[in-house]
Image 1 (cartoon, rainbow, N blue to C red):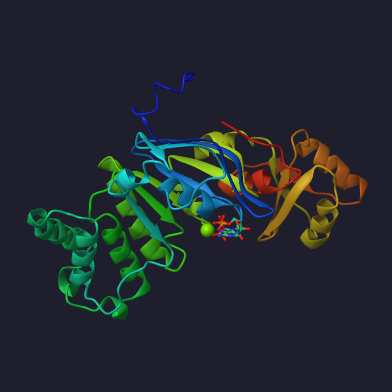
Image 2: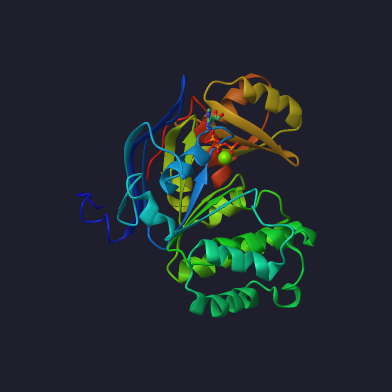
Length: 320
Ligand SMILES: Nc1ncnc2c1ncn2[C@@H]1O[C@H](COP(=O)(O)OP(=O)(O)OP(=O)(O)O)[C@@H](O)[C@H]1O
Ligand SMILES: [Mg+2]
């Protein structure tokens, strides 16, 4: 484990935030968050609606001034050095912000201009993006006439037209189909492979699963942080599969049982997440006391279990 903070700062961390808070009137939208995002990682940002993901991202980009805390991004102090950061980062939200009345190529040309890409390099860069992002046959198509998945791909190409070192993506895939999401994630890994750091917020567990590391926010607080494997491993023994003759009845009994954090029916079986200490044998015995003969066995925890456990108020906090 690393101890001193100063030696990581400009070397292997792209983002470091400490004590980061944001208050909007009476609401503490981000509450004392500490983040460390390693370079060239795909870092996932999870949390229920309103948990402070977008607010945190906007502070890290220098778009919003924190109420308290320290931020260092790519070695720059934010918000003080936000202007110098602008050219080094890309930012894309679910609203894609394309110019619908411009063609594919014109959108990229416009963004290259805005980002101050030297004129001499512009054409080669745009040609390369058009090729890599599969727009060779559509360069002259108006952006507004493309499908959701194509628009999203163009928005990503636009966000990286200046080859940023760091990319902030705020729910970039919320409006597209599973195939497009997969393609999009392949592009993200290509970028990370080439050294780009990516911070991406998402509500999709399959996307979270693919990240190098994830952080989970709940009402502005960081409640979990680690690799997907570390976080799921920390729940070992706490996810149980229950098979009972009457699953709906077993579910209603389980939901009222102390130590049970959540119960979900999956087909004919129940998936139960428990607080630490409630194991399969105990659960089975407790069900028997209510007249339910069930088979209970430990099953592999997944990230959804991690999410539920981290965002339930009675769940124990996790850090890895
Ligand atoms: N400019 C603002 N003024 C007042 N309140 C704000 C402002 N921006 C955000 N908030 C509030 O801060 C809280 C966190 O919002 P934020 O948009 O960061 O959540 P989120 O995690 O991105 O949610 P979602 O998953 O829905 O996108 C919410 O309660 C929101 O209403
Ligand atoms: Mg948001």
